[in-house]
Length: 374
Image (cartoon, rainbow, N blue to C red; front, side, top):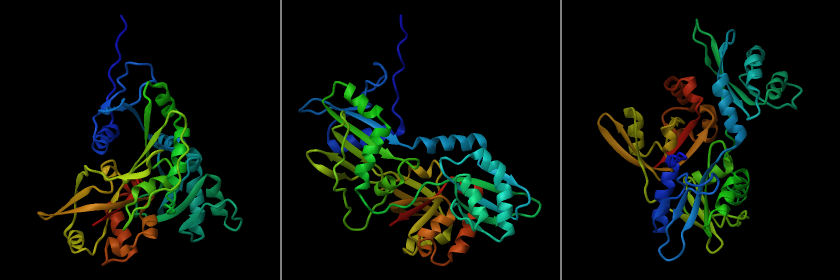
């Protein structure tokens, strides 16, 4: 007698999608994929319409394979390089094609040359013949190198390898139409699974990630003052996909009948963060508008529209998240964020020094979140 397969368990994201779709659609949404059929034939969820046949829903998070593989290589080969002889720690922004073994082997000597010539930041441009250090780091597939704090006497410097997540959003909402076409091409199992099912109405839910298309991620993460614009271009969908849900800080829906529409999150979460008295008072007065955290697993669950309850010395203050921007490190964040929105009483250099005293290099290496609240 064949042993039956263990029923599939929905992951946290699929559970959230199921709950939100029930609220949006006003119809029960049930788990459909229970491992009772061959792989590739059962969509994740089904919408149990009361007045027409059920609809299939397949859920996917879009991630760039090269970016994910680079993460795996970093974990295996090490994101920290000891560098005796350097006077400062250094942070290095990688691309998905950076050869990490070569970076480990060559960077200490390359950065010694940088320090010897007084360079504190190095752009990785391969076509810059006047800067041999820049050409060397570019040949490794490195975007940018920046000097950190001075080395504590008696210790060795550390070179930290960081991911480059991409540039900020350009403001073009139509990037979402072209992105969902590319995402469905990258994840060809999504339309294939929907097409192979017996459902005649088929939805794909796609969420951008840090390791996917950064323009699409920003377009969905940002909340705007005033009217929030929608894409005007219709996506060209593959056979098997009738409707699209784009899932981020904003939740957008496209169907041939309605075009693009937006659905408000009906179930915002409340997160808790502790603050020292000074930043707490600045938030309470409205002088501080942005809270800075590293992008650890706990903080990555915070989404625009959620609430954060801040506490300090027995006092509580609950605020709503307007938007979240992610940066490679504190230096990059202060190139884009207004320092007065983070702390109106301190300049950017002093703030960066304070943040690095609070967060060690390995924590900053996770990435930095600028959480705008109101």
